[in-house]
Image (cartoon, rainbow over all chains, first blue to last red; front, top):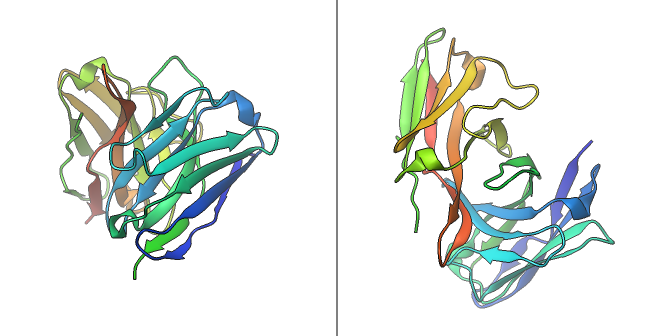
Length: 121
Length: 110
């Protein structure tokens, strides 16, 4: 059974940092691209960042480029998101999701339950 | 950047058909996926690659994608279909590769 379990969220002041983790199980982690998606309270889904299975390609939304860093440790089956220079508008539930293997423009077929990041003074 | 526009809300009586649109420039040239999200839960993939149905998704859910509009159709709507629905596509251009979600549609079953 595919499982994704996020952790690392919490309350942080503006300008602060956090590192989110997503522990994966039930599939060959290194074979799949992975993604972070966030959802601000009462708002819609917002793509944040993606990383290829081998970690040789990374992609970021303009809103987080230069502040967030996605990475993965395939030996630990774990995905990470380093959040720096946090802003109030980064407050959201952060989901990790697996990208289905395909030929491009692939869907996110499994999602974790999310970890909440709150940026406030 | 690429944008996907959905109606904020759709209301439908039980047993009737709900259609949710997702508008985007030449979206018919992209693979579009649809997610269902119920309150307090993570999104669930209900339609992939425009019209495919993942295992476990009822046949009542179907999708299409032509021109500038993708559509999710829910036939014989049930109370349990009440949720937020999001379309999603990959954005790829000369200077940007990423993913885009639609603005979301709340489906209310009357």
